[in-house]
Image (cartoon, rainbow, N blue to C red; front, top):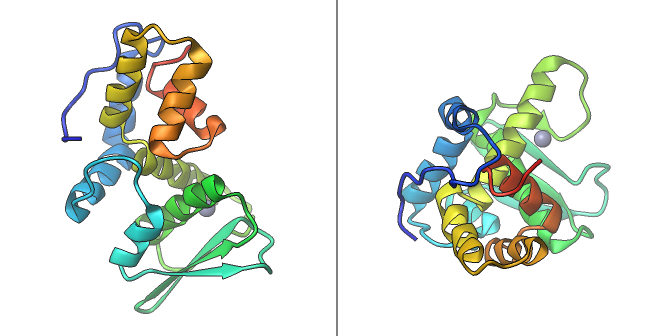
Length: 183
Ligand SMILES: [Zn+2]
């Protein structure tokens, strides 16, 4: 799929300023730029492959108390991933940890940490992960096709989820965010 600046869907329950604000805040634009930089131009995006191309090591672990952790030290960036987690959630976790490595100061992420700064970084990492796995203009293409076919809502969600290889929960959140589902 090509890069384009899709307008939010006509039946959007979301005001346009909200989507534009999210774009300006960075996560959407950063994710799109990264995909373009890596030459990844259609779904599903493989976050493991993104990490590999960026020289980021992924280490499966059974010992994590979190779903995943990102660790940056010197030139080395490592993502530790809970190896027993469900595949779709692992994909989201890797995309989330990529955000910490690419956007946030060096350190270790993933352990629960108090404080507003950590909370906002977690939100930003989630937004980046959703944007990387489900870029807005690609979702628009798939969702608008399902809308044209007059598919019932669960089927629309499923169609998007299987195209992007994302969980039903993450897909539903993303479709709401982009104005394809009412809140
Ligand atoms: Zn995190």
